[in-house]
Length: 104
Image 1 (cartoon, one colour):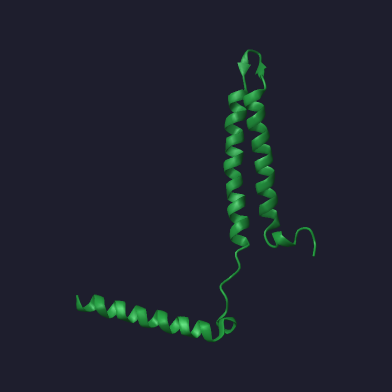
Image 2 (cartoon, rainbow, N blue to C red):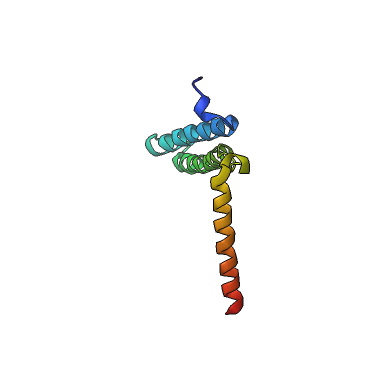
């Protein structure tokens, strides 16, 4: 068991998301708390907006990482007799709903 076993898939998307969060958070904090004036022009707003943009971009990385770690649906063989029973119940319910709609 390694340190990164829980991360399993899509480590590149995770790294992207973490880096964008760190860069965006740092830019936001510097833009808010540092006095950045060069030749009479204030650049704090620029850092706040760019930091917010980086944090929003990190959401794409988090979504990609999370969706890449979702395990696929279980195969029919893995479900065994419970899967067959669920399939029968779903089919029966679907047929009843369909027949009810066709009469009305």
